[in-house]
Structures are given as C-alpha cells and as structure tokens.
Length: 188
Image (tube, rainbow, N blue to C red; front, side):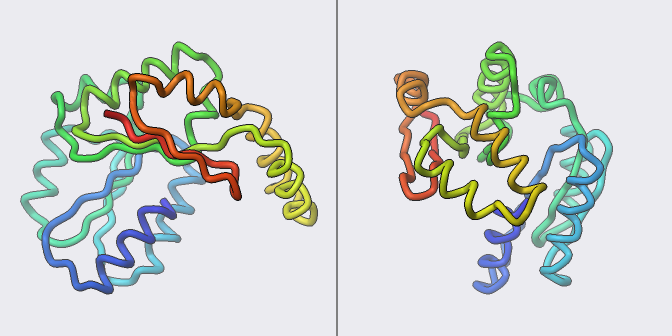
C-alpha cells in the first residue's frame, strides 16, 4: 500500500478533514504485515482495521464510527467482490503492479468486469515489456537477489505495448511512462 501511504501522507500534510476510506485487498499475510508497517509510519493520522472478509455492512459500520482517514486491510476474494458490494459502490478502484500476476486471460477479464461493476472509476497501473528498461532494471537490481528475481519474472509476464494498446481500445485511455516501463490505463 505504498501508493496509498503517499496519498494519505499528502492528505495529512494538507490537513484534509473529510472522512476517507482506503481499502487494501490481499490474501498474503506477508503483504498485510508489510502494509501495516508501512502505514504505521504515518503515525496517529490514520486508523487501520485488519478484517478477514469485508462486507458492505461492515464497511458502513466503520464509516459511521470514523470521521477521519481510515485504512481497511482485508482478504476478500477479488473475484467475488461484486457479490459483496452493489454496482458503482466505490468511487475509485485501482490495481498497482498486480494484473500481470494473473496467468489466465479469463481471470484478467473477470477482474476487469468486476472492477467496472463495483466502481465509478477505475485505474490499472502495471508494467509493459521494454527490453532497454528490462536491462536497466536488471542492472539496478543485480545486488538485490530477491528484487532481481521478482523483477525478471514480472517483466517476462508483462504484455508488450502493442497488446496493451489493442486491449485498451474502447475501454479507456492508456498512458505509457517510457523511462520506467510502466503504463496507466484509465477506464471509461
């Protein structure tokens, strides 16, 4: 939840006082632990809830009881979110460096359908195959074996730019960040 932490940090600096809720969905216990450690660096400016399965009812309970910045970490099945939440329930749903981990195209399509169903706006941030960037990332990660290993396998799973452009037609606006090898797809 690094992107979330950065947004929350700006909100705290600007003394944002309206209620806002960030929800992180991830089944990994390690990711959950890292997210909590990362978010705890913000101090007392936020309240963190760790919930196994988040429902609309539980979310509304938390929202009523809290007027500041709230982060909810849950382990819901991403492919079942449309059963837990009504259409267009969330203002924004996004994924960051996630979608390339889904192996089956049918899973990617199912996730897109669910996200489109439950959110008013959605964003997808991920990487694309770019051999010069892959070479630079490999050099940068050479002394960090865990990072290097993850980076290499992620790059092998990334789609190429042509596939991303083709996929995004009639779905949204795509922006490529050439110096980093990442893209942002803003769905219509």
